[in-house]
Image (cartoon, rainbow, N blue to C red; front, side, top):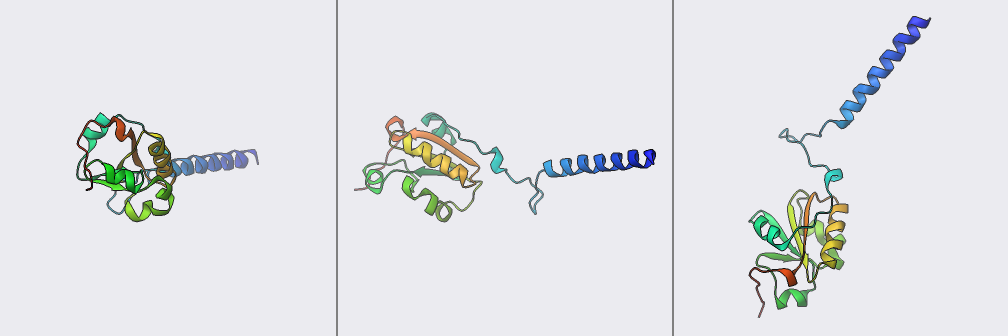
Amino acid sequence: MRVKMKKLSVIILSMIVCLCFAACAPVLREDDSPMPSQENAVYKKITPQEAHYMMSDDVVILDVRSQDEFDQGHIPNAVLLPAADIRDMAVTIITDKNQTILVYCRSGGRSENASRALIDMGYTSVFDFGGILDWQGEIMVIP
C-alpha cells in the first residue's frame, strides 16, 4: 500500500511539474514566433533624443494633445489622438498592439497617463518621451 501511495505521489508531482513548464512556455503564432506578453509591457520613459533616434516609418508617433494644440505645431508624421479619447479610439487608430508607439503631449503629464492607458489596453511597445516643449527637432504647423 505504501509503495502504491509513493508511486501515486511521484506521478502527481511529475504532472504538476509538467503543467508548470507548459504554462510557462511561450505562446506561438502560426509562423512559430513567440507572441509578446502584456505582462512584459511596462511603462517606459525615454528622452526626446531617444525618441528621435527610434523614429522610422514603422513607428507610430502619437500626439495626445488637443486638436488646437496639434494645429499650432506638432512633430512631423505624428498622429493625433487626444488623451481623453485614448480608451475609446486607440484600437481604431493603432490596430497592431505590438506596434512601437512613441507618445508625447505638451509637457509630459498627459503622455504618461496615455502611455499607461495603452499598456493597460494590451499594447506592448509604448514609450513616453514627454512634452513637445522639450523637443529639439522639426515642428510642423497647420496654417
